[in-house]
Image 1 (cartoon, rainbow, N blue to C red):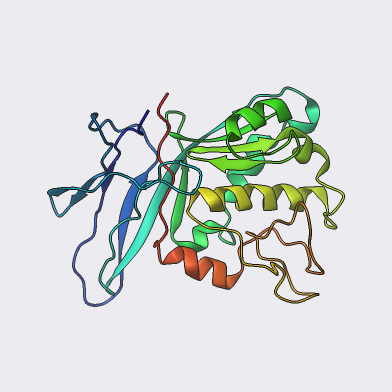
Image 2: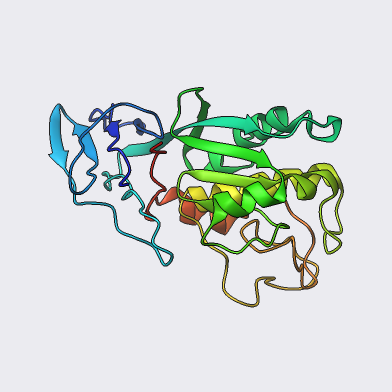
Length: 247
């Protein structure tokens, strides 16, 4: 079923001195249009503009176009509304929600690229912790093999075993791995991709957070935070965003 259209509002005003934040709210259940193709309603300067239907990515998951470009006097802030679901009950995963919140609010993360992460129990975007078989279902058609995590449309699905013990290839501590896992998969949600091979820019340097650090570090140091060039790329808001959840 096509994703429900989301109303995204801008509060930009014209200034000549300091940049004025233009806040785009994304991920909440705000109602919208139904019909043959989902559309994104943009409320800008009290004018509603209907955009074309979201395009499909390489595995057929619809994505919402990025917010329109703004003038140099306007700073774009994208408010991302999300909710957290912990679908396992063991003690090793008890702090999942706290770690997700803290990681997404940390200024070293995607907040540094103009994303304001706002937890909302009714949000259309969801970060889920689940066992491998459930993650496989949530991630289909991606192949996670009961072992790995993914972002699939509006869902970030975190494999509970990876949360508990990381991977053999990870050379950092478990707390850092969890931060990396959240930032990596949410990075996909925000339209960011794996870097081209070789994913490690040079041995001994921090790995890009969008590199596949769970499977191979290639001589790079484990790193849970976006690198400056990753933040700069994300701050341009040029990549399409995942759609809100349609039950």
